[in-house]
Amino acid sequence: MIKIQAEANVPTEHGNFRMIAFSENENDWMPHMAIVAENTDFSKPVNVRFHSECITGEVFHSKKCECGQQLDAAMKYIHENGGIIVYLRQEGRNIGIINKLKAYSLQEKGLDTVQANLELGLPADDRNFGVAIEILNLLGVTDINLLTNNPEKVKYVIDSNIHLNSRVPLQIPANEISKGYLKTKKDFFGHLLDDNDN
Image 1 (cartoon, rainbow, N blue to C red):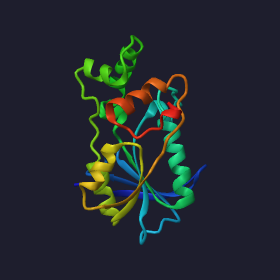
Image 2 (tube, rainbow, N blue to C red; image 1 turned 60 degrees about the horizontal axis):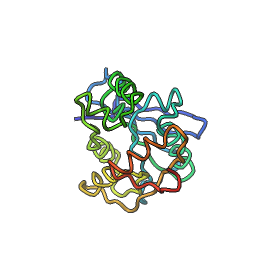
Image 3 (tube, rainbow, N blue to C red; image 1 turned 120 degrees about the vertical axis):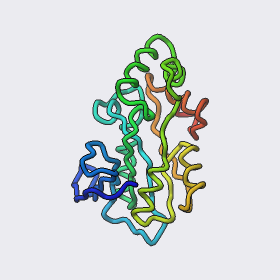
C-alpha cells in the first residue's frame, strides 16, 4: 500500500508546484510523484495527466519520442489551469532503461517499437495505471479531466471509482524521426492522434 513519504513546494520554469512522493517504503529512491499546481481547485473536476518516466526524452531530449515535450506541455497547461501530473516510474513502458536501449538497438535494424519489445521477449506495453488511481484516491480526487491520447489510460479511469469528466488531447507534432513511433502508437495501441501531425 503506497502512502505519502515526503512533499515540498518546488518552483520550476513552468510555475510553482507541490511535489509529493508516494511509495510503500520511505527509503525508495524511485517513488511515484504527484506534481500539483498551486491554483488547483479540488471542488471541481481536476485536470490530470498520467505521465510515465522517460529519461531519454525528458532529460536528454531524444527525438525518438515526444515524451519530454508532452511533460513540458502538461506542466504548462496544469500551471495555467490547475491540476495534477501523476509521474509514474515506468521507464520505457515499464521495461526499464537497459531494455529500452536494447529495443532502440533493434529499432536501428528496422523493427518498430512494438516489434523490438516482443523480439526481446518483453510486453509491448507493461505499464500499470492502477497506481495512478491509487494516488488520486489518496489525494481525495473524485472527478477529473484527463490529459491523454491513450485509450488505455481512459479505460483505467472509467473502470475506477473516479469520474471521467472529459478527455483533453495532448498531441505533439511529429518530427522526421518520431513519425514512425507515433504511427505505431496510433496503429497498434489505438492512440487518439490526428493524422495531419503524423
